Each structure stands twice: as structure tokens, then as C-alpha cells.
Length: 308
Image (cartoon, rainbow, N blue to C red; front, side, top):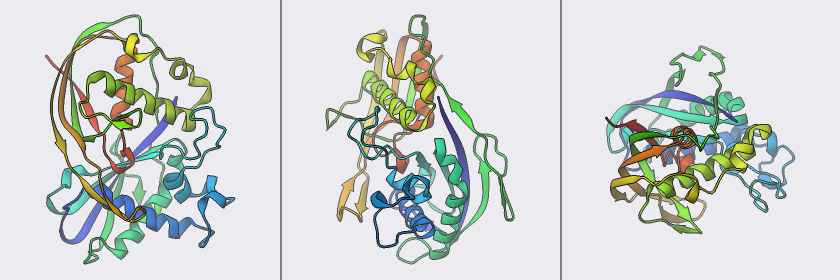
């Protein structure tokens, strides 16, 4: 239904650095700037008016234009960005090495060479006010642990496929823990949900799967997603307990010229009851694609752990 690759870049700084804000906020910004310089054929124009926008690495990742008459989100001219960054393990830590993981969705897999070159260029320019430089020391397939960059040769990482199991009739009793590793922010009806529950999380995962599969996946495999039952009545009720805290994550937006709160909920959600194969496949897909808002910044990452 939807293909992806996961690549890990090992970055070595010229001196120890301290990330006061989420590392992915900085890396997303410098990657975007470097990609635009590398890829843009219209230095003074806009992506929207460019004839090359559907085959440009920068426009694909950071603008992601779609036809306004699309049947996934009719009237919308820009889709969810087809990549996810992750490097939260070094948040508020002093280190000289960062492992930046990038999940490339659909056609985004074709632009790994642009991504590597953008990181090399960004490293030469440096990060922070002091412009501390970094180098790309290794590139590996995060799923197979195979090195994909040797000298000047960059080989493609493995392609994996996400598929949704449509079976909602059978079920199995389970006790799960959904551990939120980076802040999750979920919107419903244009408003942020302050108290996340299991069903709102599952609905957000389904919406993300439907949108990404619709824009970047196999159109012939979409029936189980588009014809999906109403989640409010499609699954059996669960017992749940959410141990959480609200995390405030400020980020300065250069485009909007203001500080933004990128935070959300972190913690662990214990859920028990009868789970269908469809439900379990949704949870598994969400582990790869993340959930909620700002997934392109690495937010909304969770894992599913089975409880004894």
C-alpha cells in the first residue's frame, strides 16, 4: 500500500554541542535551505509556479504540491510531507555525534542522494550561532544496518512496504503499552485535543495512513483504507490508563516570524481488551509513520509494547 525506506546518517561535530531545542528542528531547517540551493532552478520564483516542482527534491520534500482536484483531500494544494526526521536521543545532551534517522516515504526514496549532499553542504556551513561544522561519517540502512555509502558510491536502501489488514471481525485479547517517545499533538475539528485517549490516537493514525497512502501509495490497494469502517463503532471498547505530561517545545519560525509551541503529550498509555488484526496493523503502521501534527519534525513517535 505504501513503500518507505529508513536511513541513518552519523554526523560528527568538530566540537561537542548542546541541543537546547529539539535537534530535528535545526536539521530540518538546514536540510531545507541546502536542498533549495542545490535543486532550485528558479532562484527568484516560487515552487507553485515552477514547471519542475513535481521532480524537484526541495519541492517534493518541503512544498509537496498536489492537484487541487485530488480525491484524497479535495481542495487542498499541498499534502503531508513525505519524510520523517528523528534524533531526539541527544535533546538536552552534550555530544559530538548525532545519529539522524530519516524515513523516506514513496517517491521520496529516490532523493536520498540529494539528502546526503544537502547534509554535507549544511555541515560545511555549520550549526548554531557559532557555526560549528559537522561531517557525515556514515550512512546506513536503519532497517538492515547495512552501510549504503562507501566513498563516492551511494547504494539505495531497502524498500519496505506498509499494508493495512482489513480484518475487523476476528479479535484477540491483548494488553498493550503505547509509549510516546516524542510529543504527540492531535487535532480534531481544527482544535487541539488536550486529553488524548486511545480512540483519538487511533483515529489520527488512520487519517494519516489514508492521506499518505492516497497521495504517495498504490492506488489499487486503497480500498481497505478508503472504505474503512467508522472507527467510533468499528472496534470494541478498551480499558485504558494514560500516564502523561504536557511538554512545551518552543521553535522560532523564520517564515512566520514568531515563536511556536511544538509541544504535546508524552508518556505511556496502557490499553487492554480485544484487538482486531486491522487495529493491530494500524498501530504497527503508526510506529513507522508517527502520529499527529509536526511529524516532519520528528514528533509523534511512539512504540507498541506487549504487556505480560
